[in-house]
View 1 (cartoon, one colour):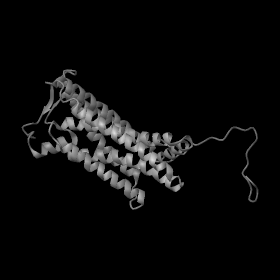
View 2 (tube, helix red, strand yellow):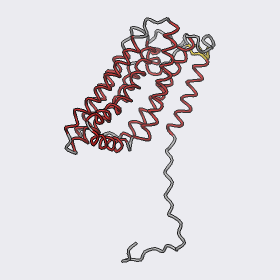
View 3 (cartoon, one colour):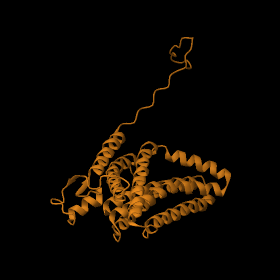
View 4 (tube, helix red, strand yellow):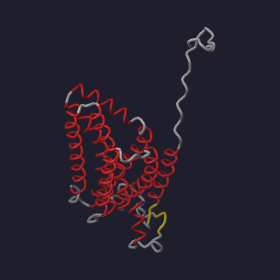
Length: 290
């Protein structure tokens, strides 16, 4: 649980850190430092709201009935999987263009005033913050009440992301973002599949989905639930020795479909065609203008 949560925290945190680095570096290089305070205001607001949402989800549901808790927890798990899946594919396509897009938005916001600048910082970090809050709730529910391991994992991951963001800004560290997001994306797909299976189990316990007693396999005699290796498998992949048919089908289908789509090479853009012309086009001779 510590490793998987640290990975999620690192990935989500680094995305937010890169947004901040791009915005701050742009303002510093263009000598518009007056706007830095408004960017930080927007970032801080997004962080506070995200932390508040995570706390509300985590502690605000403790007094509800067991079935209601399981229904909320299962729904949050599936929503978290949807968010992280969309994020994985978005970063696959946007990693190369995110810098230009953010700079363009900030450049326009500077002409509109401080509120618009703060909004760019808020929206840039707020999306990752929303995903982080829901994923944090889903992982803490999967770990069980009283287990602080997910929190420590998230703190380690987020601290690493902040440190990496700082070193990238200072120019001390250069990483291949394409490779980073590819390999962490593969790992997150496996983690998300486990969260999906756990969410389905929650919905089965809430009697929202059928099949709680219909098991695909039960290897509890081989992998004892109280053993260290069972805890390791549960912490990284949310694997449980007794898995229902619906959980197994969902896990397998998710990994098979999402992993294939994620690893599929992006299609190269079609070459632009020259407009049709009735006049033949001849090659320019040396010394002639094309």
